[in-house]
Length: 229
Image 1 (cartoon, rainbow, N blue to C red):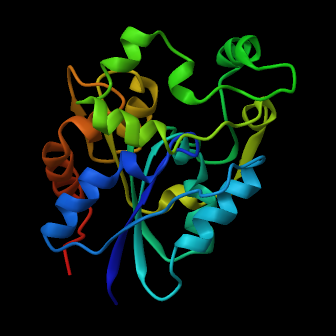
Image 2 (cartoon, helix red, strand yellow):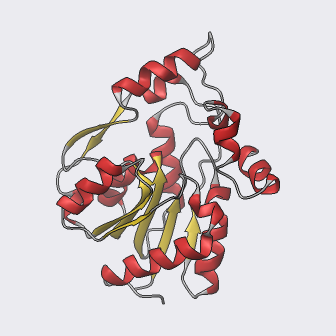
């Protein structure tokens, strides 16, 4: 049975964050699909439905989420033929229980930037301009990514997702860009998953050095026993 790599972007951004890495992997012979959330989601169910619609039923899948998309992996594992997952600077859900869409301390920050209708600005407006500019390799890439950003309601981040017991028994791995997701990386190591950290990188490193990121993914895929078709 063929295996496809399913690249999951954060619902705050769009498929362009994965496009350079997807191109490298495709050129190297992998079957790659980027799973967009095309309509502005209002709830976690909207995002889950969009991901499920993009994941084929007729093949084995390796899901590779970035950032907030990691929260959806347990549900995808239980509803599709997911044989492995690689979390890329992403939320790593617990073994069971529920996974919040935002930590409690971060919710206070989000409440402070939501407008009167409860809608949040696009993601690149959450941060100082100097910090945002450093995330992108050039103005063209930034414009492409910013053009796909979606405004989400604050209520989205005030929610949580159920975590079905048993999802973490599937093989997994973690690729961290620096230490922003150090707790998630350490939890992956506790689970005895393969873990790699790329130091001195930022959250959108997949745009800045797609060849390196693709190579790291291939290495982790190999350690999970997955090879290109």
